Image (cartoon, rainbow, N blue to C red; front, side, top):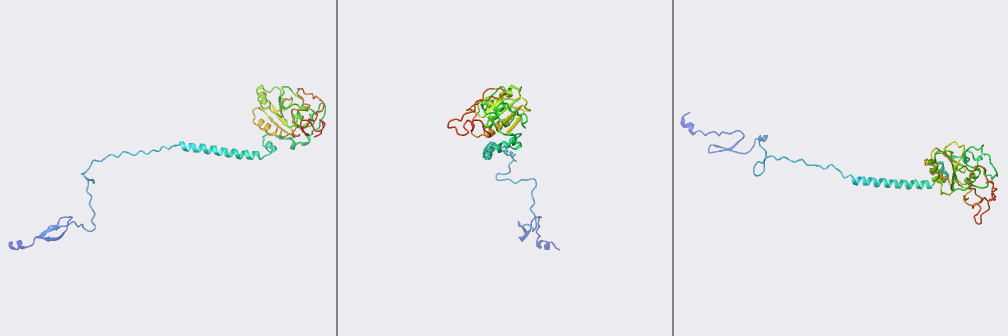
Length: 294
């Protein structure tokens, strides 16, 4: 090829990598921004994107503190109020239930109580007899009922420091009194605790009793409870439940009539008690002048 032919031959455009030519003008290749199909952008290594104003140094982000603590005061207050409400409702329900029970039903719930009305009703005769009465054949000691003297021991919260006649005490129980007895020699502290439950309360009396098999025994007509300690909570329950509710003679009194206030185990035969004017059949005296059999 001659030199003239080489000059007249069109020059080829050089195409660099990553670019393409769409046309050649004046013998020069034109670049375009078109990218090959399927090509992926190449990330520039070592550079991070930055906003206006150029790159900025990295900032350390302070950790966000989260308050995990909880205010327990409202929760505790709500819990306490709820417990109080439940207690009030529970007590009200219990009171309604208790008030719906008869006194005999409540007595049956006292642990250790003996119901002689069911166990041995034949022993609970109620004849008036003068003089000394033999109680050695009674199934219980002290007796919780039986034949007795026409005069009763005063039972207006009386605390007798010496033994009294059983014949008079049984008549007091017939009227509704609770007779508390204790073994002679019981500790003074125990005796004082019992006296605090008796003194000043109508239909209650207490005295020592020789020969009983428990430190403390409580009797009403037809019921008996024996305990070892004056702090036993059953004592107060027994007294409030059965005296004077267990009276054989409902409405009889412990204060009027021919009553006995003396101590000593020998019964005293006083004149028959007289009917109190306007007192009614059971108002302080026996219906038949002290010679009844009921």
